Image (cartoon, rainbow, N blue to C red; front, side, top):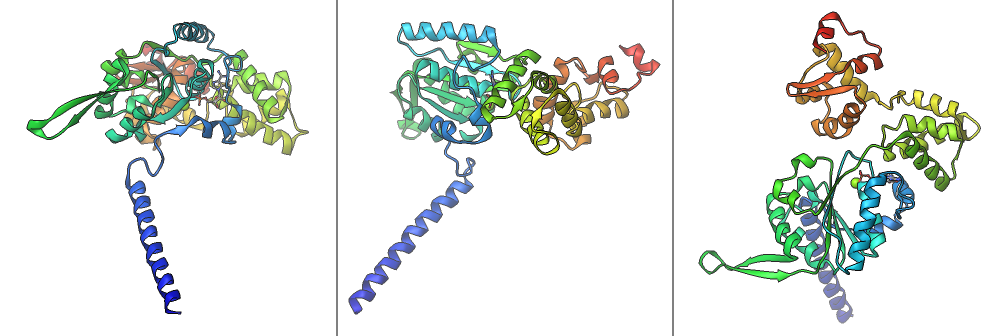
Length: 373
Ligand SMILES: Nc1ncnc2c1ncn2[C@@H]1O[C@H](COP(=O)(O)OP(=O)(O)O)[C@@H](O)[C@H]1O
Ligand SMILES: [Mg+2]
């Protein structure tokens, strides 16, 4: 009997000990900036994760619609790298969110027949995060770093020799006995993505062999994206229905996909299940997406500049504060499309609504404003 007690006691002690370690680990992870997330997201998880975005994410160049010029140059670089049996040059993609930067990295890996590790700059806070990832790479593997403009100085400096010479410079010892150790790394390809190429440091930008800007998509290209997505999700849509959604997708495939899904809910509940021109337009009106694809925030931004600041110019911080919006959201998400479609103008003294912007919102430009244009 006493033996049984003894065994139970030992077991309890062991259990407490193990739990203490686990909870300690959890606390540590929660406290760390990465919030308990592994800095690497494996492509496999992305591939098999059945979330909406991932089921419809193109995996091959054939499925990747538009960006024709970029695709052609990439295909050539990939074929040349394969022929030389060398990894592809480091690549940098920039452009507004939702245009297909992450998707393209996956497509390139597929075409190279290479594995890909996906991470983002904010999860590479500590030197050991980036060192850990670099040391885990296999020859020919692709490392994708999203939001690369947010990489901190230390991580950047670790990355320089890794990108240039495929090596890590490690320092050991203290002050007088400090030694630098060069650790070789396998040859890999870094693909960086950013919404803000301007915020990338010069030395980092210079280490990319290929730098490309992703373009907004045409209505025809977005129509193709929409029809492809509808096909995968078993959504019935007419050609005109697809065009109607494409028109309001702000040149962005991610928005096009989101709208197809929202409109298909309307089609199912309020109509007979098929997305036609009429169903698409009526549903998007209800969703407050106008004919230009502008949503409530975009219109609020234009309205504010017109009504409170005589059409501008006004600084982005002022606009953000008045709208209770994040400056970054306005700069990265709203502005690029407003600028591209000519509704907004950027001047050294701030943002200004263009005559087209006034027209689009049904506002009159007064004579004082007119004299400024
Ligand atoms: N060229 C494309 N062809 C078809 N679908 C695309 C294309 N580019 C992006 N998409 C779709 O848009 C979504 C967002 O793309 P993503 O690569 O995540 O954008 P980014 O990384 O630039 O923010 C993807 O899930 C994908 O389904
Ligand atoms: Mg992305």
